[in-house]
Image (cartoon, rainbow, N blue to C red):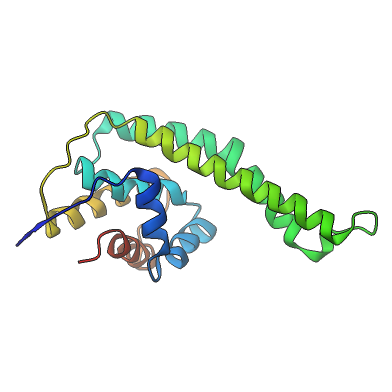
Length: 176
């Protein structure tokens, strides 16, 4: 099998490119909304496979510990407020619609910046700058291993739907 040539994308670029691929955002959001997965960690699992292969145990522990705390204290509260403010029932007559929309946009920007910061911190945990030469089957295998490790860590059952959704994310991350 031929080697895969990977570009030296930083984690943010990788995450944005992958998320924009057909089917990826839907798969990621389903894993987040139905199963409680952290989209940034799903994408990080794939990015790690392209940089290190299978997750080194210490890095996995460090990344999941940081991400769990960061998302619970920063990302999820911002997302909850933004989502609530989208609901027409949250408006009161004392808050004009345009003001509510402007505040919601500010919160959405803060949410995105908090996710971006999370990815920067996760990327900084990887000290090796050398990108290994991967074969497509190795890359996909490592990505599956990393995602399954994360899914298991979150206490999510790796059923057929979860596996299929993970495969959509991997295909978006590493189109061949």
